[in-house]
Amino acid sequence: MLKKILIALVAGITIIQFFKPEKNISTIPQKNTLINSYTVPSDVKIILKKACVDCHSNNTNYPWYSQVQPIAWWLSYHINNGKKHFNLDEFLSYNPKKQDHKMEELIEMVKNLEMPLNSYTWAHSDARLTNEERYALTDWATAIRKEINLKTGFVATHE
Image (cartoon, rainbow, N blue to C red; front, side, top):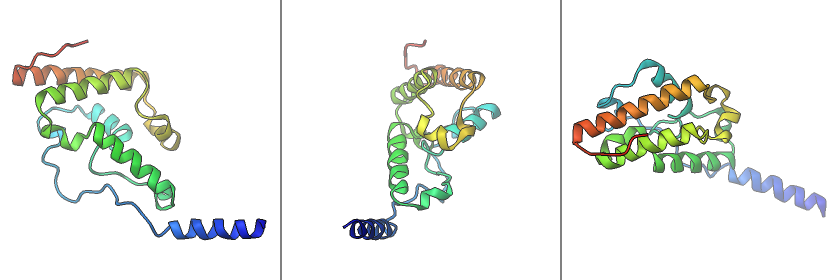
């Protein structure tokens, strides 16, 4: 009986390897990316690249283990969910109120240590943010909120 279960398990794991989710890789220039309209200092660009871009843009840098099922499905879910909540490459397609709100959420999530996700930093230790990096990121996002308000006349509450 145990042998049959083991054979079924190995067969199941082998079969699912043929069902791979679509990769989050875009080959076209991103016209709605945040950096097309807002200044991103080099230190913040580094922080965004190491801790945010993989799940919050249209281009993910996939690790080797993303080729293995069911891990690929789990990664795909996290990437799609991350992009649904905040996509740096689609930022300019958001209306000003939503842009402001997304920056507000970024500030809150980073300050509350909710982003980047622990499940991401376990595998990407370089994505763990120092307090200094958190301050740089949240200060930048606060400045973006002010710039959005100046450009559009939208009045939002600032922390």
